[in-house]
Image 1 (cartoon, one colour):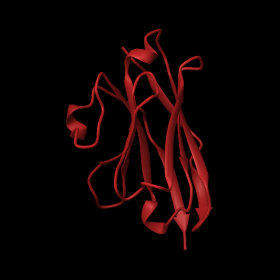
Image 2 (cartoon, rainbow, N blue to C red):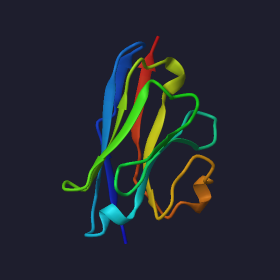
Image 3 (tube, one colour):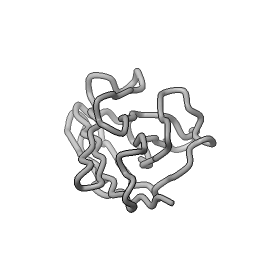
Image 4 (cartoon, rainbow, N blue to C red):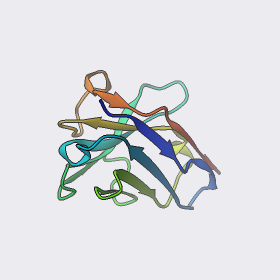
Length: 124
């Protein structure tokens, strides 16, 4: 069982930066791929980014490539999403996710573990 708790959401102006974090419970953190999904108002939950258990491999949605960076610290059981050059269309609830395999294209319904979500709002 993995429990995930996000933090760091908030309100930021367009063009600004924000970092969200996700703390995971359990002693097998490094055996899970970790990822971020988001759900914008009126839209389905969508993949944002993922990182492999070792941290050596990452995957991003086309909409965030070059602006967002996912990373993890296995000593702290924490995964981060650094968001730069934010746009109003990045406004969403951001969810941390964990599974044995997470990549772009994995449907949200197939993901094993979820956090409760943190709101990110980008004003224009």
